[in-house]
Image 1: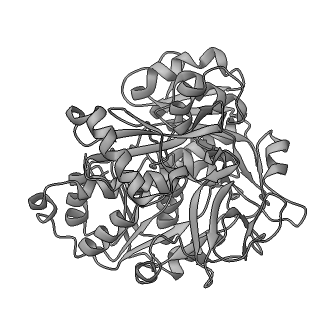
Image 2: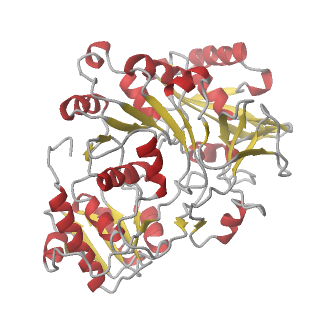
Image 3: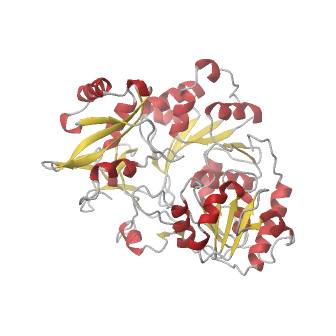
Length: 500
């Protein structure tokens, strides 16, 4: 743990995850049963994860920033029979007890007692530190972010198999980036997210070392690279922005020469931000595009990105198709919905308890989509323009907000920007922007006029926002994903809307 310096050895993790696995087995959980984990980044986090992974159990890691209502929904929806939490999150853990009747045992990590919960250390000490007689691979079932409604669990088709076989998804880690027993991997993000969780546990499968930040702080992240000799790391674009925002003297203070690979994903990265990061760290910043659903993946190296700025790369697993609303392939350069052919040998997925959503994500050919919108160039490089649910339809014209957001965010007076459609009696929707200024004191009509003029100078008239509002902070997930619905709902209110 980068902040506290607490060290978890492989011996300790093996012993304690065995005890938790034995506890789950004694509680009657078997292959395919479910547990939930609601904890902040802490040393014990991986113990229930590995206990489930080595005993055939499905585990759901829950965003520790969610409200009690949101947590209760996920715990109940995933059919968790055991819940692991911490005393830090006691208020939420206690508040959901009556709303999660399927939970049979509740365990809390940390010294402070949590009403209605067993003390974790006492509970696991009652079980042996030896492996189960039969160790079966479990699997994670994480929930979508819920930016456009209730989150849904992404469930993979899993077969009963013995522990030890390297997951196919690790091929990119070992093949492209050289993860090995010598790897020192920095994880600056919350462990309840798919990529940090998978990359940490995969690093452990290989015998490497994980450095986990309790909370992301830009200077602390740089200090951790120097202190621990980090070789590999993974980031989201908002982290790049915050590190670039440090004074030059601070950024130059730390020796980052051990860093061989810096990976980023999860949210779009502005071209100017990535270019500045490559200038600072060198051509070691690689990118991949994928989704929790595991339907496909693209990859682009720093060198290729400099030749194709803004691209998320070419496909790794199976062909990509850009389809129009009738399901017809579009030629290079034309924008449509991104569909992936089924990757050979990869397990299928479904949305837990939502057959309709599963059907919407697949077609009769077995191709799948998560609703992203983009285009392919003549060389097969994919460029994302937006999520389908964020597309603005103004007077019958499709407008993709990301282009406008990138332009606004590149303005020196802007820290962040969100663009979406709001009701318009004539057009159906009109383009609207909400901006987080670098300095709140500048927010007002004068800055709004300046930004609107900036848009008009670079965009066609129909793409330009009609007005700009200001917020001190835009609502973003830790991955950098914007909760645009929270902003749009203020403008759409309770009236009829095609936007969900």
